[in-house]
Image 1 (cartoon, rainbow, N blue to C red):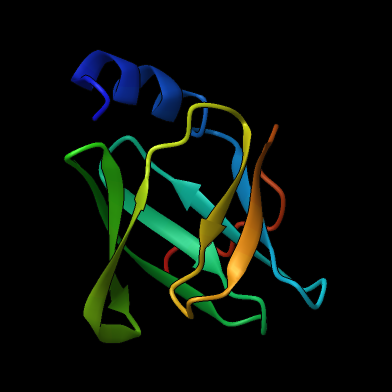
Image 2 (cartoon, rainbow, N blue to C red; image 1 turned 30 degrees about the horizontal axis):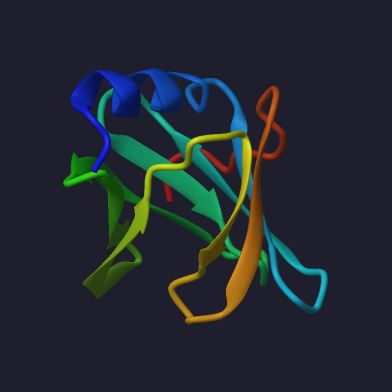
Length: 108
C-alpha cells in the first residue's frame, strides 16, 4: 500500500491535466480530477459524467453522481504517468496522464 504522501504527490500531477483511458477498440475516455474531491469525465461514447473521488487504501475511488449510478469504482494509485488498469466495464485499458486539459465537459 502506498503512503499518503506518495499518493498525494502522484495525484498532484493529475490536477489541471487530463487522464486518458484507451480501450482495446481504440476508443478513449477522459477524466479530470479536482483538488476539491470532485471529478468530471467524458466517456468513450461521448457522454459526460461527474462525481466525487477519494483515496482509500492506496486506491483512487470514484463515485458517479451525474448521471447517478449506484456503484463505485476503485483503481490502484499509479506509480507512473502511464499504466494499465481495468475499466469499470472490466476491460483492460491503457491509461496515461496528458499534460493540459483537453475537452473537459465541465460539471455533468
